[in-house]
Image (cartoon, rainbow, N blue to C red; front, side):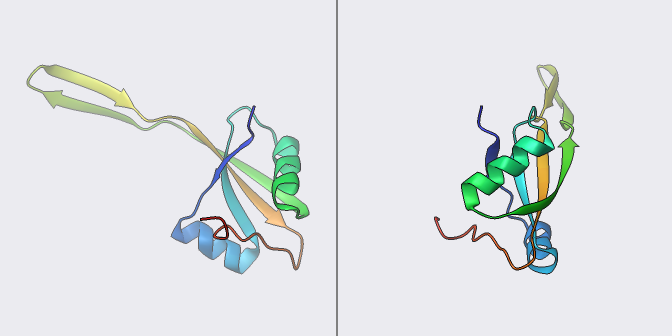
Length: 96
């Protein structure tokens, strides 16, 4: 089971990493905070102070077409906001 799926690189997440030293990752929905902390420390070689998680519910849509009503939804996602120790940082753009 892979815990870290990908880093989230948006304007809000980038600003949060520059100001507060917090990085955002999409993680496995079954992972807990302790597993996330160990995975980030192992993958990037940094020390993690705090982990906050967010469960994002799926977005549901209904479309009215010629053939009838179609229902659909996006996937549920779990996000983790990881705060690093003072003076540490992660270079997310190094391996692009």
